[in-house]
Length: 607
Ligand code: OXD
Ligand code: MN
Image (cartoon, rainbow, N blue to C red; front, side):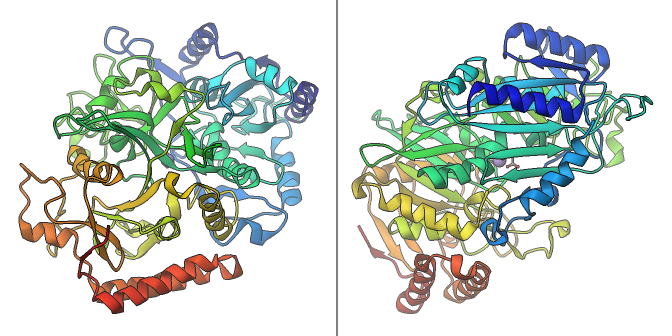
């Protein structure tokens, strides 16, 4: 496409949506100033006390628009089987016809913003460009932080770069077709929501929500759903992974990407302050990694985002001091509580709630009410550049060479604290079988496994079976000695009384230390039925109140329970029919054979 086609797309969209004005955005400080002033005067943003939280704002959403809407998220490929059994599918023409009727006049009385953005440093060969059209100035401000908004993107497009058209409307026009006015609200949105992706033509159409991943289209929509489909065509991987650099006391550095389902402490790991002397962790990304093979047959990773859109509750001075420091200034908060002196608070920021809070709905908070002051999915949006542990490579066009990939779920049973895959294919099997026990009845049967392969369940833009095959293919294209090693971790194993066996948080650095020592060939591992485990004594537990019994419990492999798990995996894999790679069935059979052969937990030294 050429720059002309951008203009054409903008003109056609304006004809359809009928805004009263079009503004071409440039991502400048002046634009930030103008839009924050506008939203403070309209009541959408509250300016926080500049002495306590300079250049920072609080937004309160409509109580019905507080999270991603997975059941309203669609993958619109020509054939249903190309979306696969884990996605909501709609025919692309059917969806576009329906959406055209919703977008018709949807911006009447509002301003349409055209936001050119880059995912990844603009000059990076791994960067991809997009243009978001939105009628939400709140979205524009968030895009300023989360992506690189710049008019340079137009130059790249003129020079021939591909780009993703990303159309967004909150679906709340201020006039109907007869000119009858509807009053505006501080959080316009529509009860009907559609987050539609067209992976074959790389387009996004999002309607009805102003919140987070539904509306900041560079994030889940482009960087994961469209990104994964682009990556498949172009030979790279778009992943729901944090990215960190770990440096040993001897100064040896390793780059690690890690996939965790939502709400498994990803931001905390991305900003880990190790409890072990001499070890350092620096942050490159907390949510998404784009990973591509380089000319040395090695994988290189970039964080396509430029900001954190982190969950506030549980992010505390004790649990994540780095995040708390990061959001000292220049931060947008959404749905947290407001303090008397014009600052913000949420559950877990401090042990005690300050007096006289205003809750996320704008009402005086009654601590006795049993209701939280901040919404459980309330967020902070802040630039990566403000993170005290940021690694300089976060902004480097070349990205970083990847040494290890971690897969984690939230498992009370079966899965040990850490286990290393035997090889790439086994590692892909580990990723494909990530799951968590459901903890709330709302999610289904409590204790049943929720499968979340590669932590990509809501984010894979095509058939998940094809996605596993793509991972296998990418591995085959790498030099064997340069392939990242793959590990599975689980911070959440519990004992028979339901108590966590591992302290977690900063102590997870002990597991990272063992992984780094494996990468450096300093320690051996023991072969077990499910992969290679640390040899007793190699995992540093000095100073931890953990008994030898607890330690053996945390690594216990129960053959009967694993056989049952293998049966569940077989049933899950059957959903993918002939899209299931043969290598995944082979790995499952290997697991079954190992369980019979070793009795599960007998450990021999493997390497
Ligand atoms: C997120 C998520 O918001 O994964 O990052 O849900
Ligand atoms: Mn995420």
